[in-house]
Image (cartoon, rainbow, N blue to C red):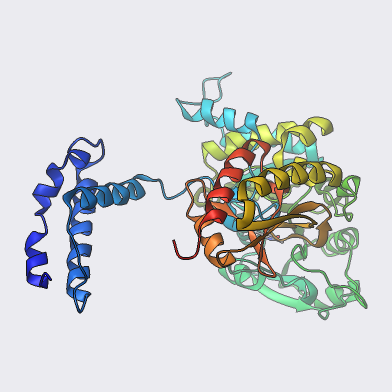
Length: 470
Ligand SMILES: *Cc1c(COP(=O)(O)O)cnc(C)c1O
C-alpha cells in the first residue's frame, strides 16, 4: 500500500499538468486554465491527506487534466444565463420576470450594436431627450398629459414622492402600507424620500373622512397604493381614486397612485378579476401614476410614470431623475413593447406574458399530454409520469388571489429523491426550475416557451434517469 508521502510525490507539478494536451491546446484565458489546474492538484492533495487509512489511490495525469477541463468549463460559463421556467409562475422575480417579445429583442440588438439617437433630435440636430422616444406613446396608450420613465417602479415611487412632497406629509391608508418582496416597504421608501408618513384609517377600513381629518398645512400629498400582492377581503372599505382626487382638488393637494403592475388592458377579458387599468386611473384625475415595466405589462424592467404635465415636469427636473435614469437597451425594448399595445390582438400575440396569461386550458392539456407521453417513454421504470390538473399563479406581486386553471405533469421518481433531482435540474446545461409537491416534481408548461420544449425533455430525461447511488 502506498503511504501519503508516496502519493504526494506522485502529484504532478502545475507546469507539468499545464503541458497536458487537453490543457495545452485549449482556447481560454490563461489565468483561468492555471487556476483550474491549481485547484485540481490542491484538491487531490487534500484528499490524500484526509484519507486514513489510504485507499488504493492512483494518480493519473489524464484524469487530473480532464478534471481541470471540467472546472475550466464551469468558469467559462456566464454567471447570468437562460433558465427554463417550468414553475408555471408567470412573473417570477427570481427568474427575471417578463420574457421579451422577439421584436423587442430585435430593437435592442439594432440600437445597442452601434450608436443611436438616444439624446439627439435628428430633425434639428440639437440635443434631444431620452424620454422623447416613449412619452407620446405612453400618453396615447394611457390618455395622460405627459410621461417619464426611470429604472424601475421602486425608483419611480421614490422619485415621485420626493419631487412632490419632500419635507411634507403624505397621507396613506393603513390598509395600503405595502411591503413588496426585496424589502420595498412604502413607509421606508417615504422616509428615504424625506416624506413624513401620515397613516389614516385601519387595516380593513379607511373612509374619505379619515383623509379629510388628517389634512393640515403640512400635507403635501395624498397617496394611494395598489395592494398588488395581497387582498383585504370581508369587512373592508377603501376610498376610490376619484374620491381622493375630489378631496385633493378641494385642498389643492396633489394625488398620486402607485399602481404596481399597471395594466393597459382590462384583464377581465381573460376571465381574470378586474384590475383598474392605467387609463382608468388617469381618467379619474390622479396627478401622478407609477407602474412597473416588467410585471403584467410584459416589457423590460422599468418604472413608468404618467400624469399631469406640471407633475411630470417636476419629476423630469428633479436631480434624482438623473440618478435613476433608464438606459438605452431598456428604452429600446420598452418602446417596442408599448407599441405592441397599439393593437390589442398584436399585444396578445406578441407579448409573451400576455400569451401565457391567455393560454387556454385546452392548449395546455394538449401540450402537457404529448409531453407526458414522450417523457414517460424515455424514463421507463425510472419514474411515473402523470398528467395532472395544475393551476398557475401570476406572481411578481400581481393578482395574488388569482389562479389560472390548466394542466401539467407530475413526476414520481423511483430511484432518487425529488430534492436531488431538482438540484440536478438547476445545475443542468440549460438550468430548469420546477416545483416540488408531495414528493413529486411538478412541471407546468404554461411558462415554458414552445421552442424550449425539446431542451426541457432532454434535461428532465437526464436528471430523472440518474440513480441515487450514481
Ligand atoms: C412591484 C411593486 C413595486 C416595485 O416595482 P419594481 O418595478 O419591482 O421596482 C412598487 N409598488 C407596488 C405596489 C408593486 O406591486
